Image 1 (cartoon, rainbow, N blue to C red):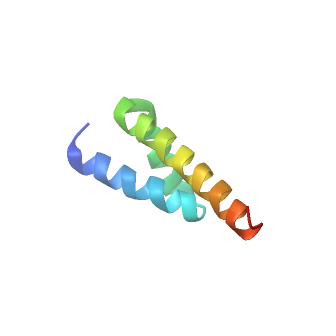
Image 2: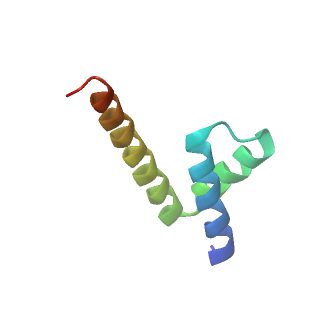
Image 3: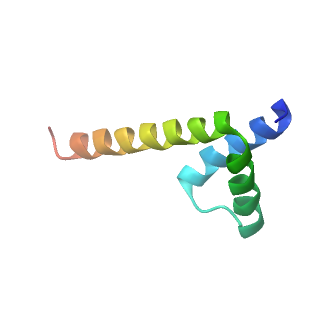
Length: 64
């Protein structure tokens, strides 16, 4: 994969955490992730960080 397509994929991964991507954009990202192991790993890590941050924010709201 070239750096430009990976950079674009990373931006899409980040936006997807905030809300749904369009159909075409989502399909392009999925295709890229099937071909790029580095971006697939990056997506897993971003999703895990997002889960941890949400859990932490939830704990802060509950006063723990």
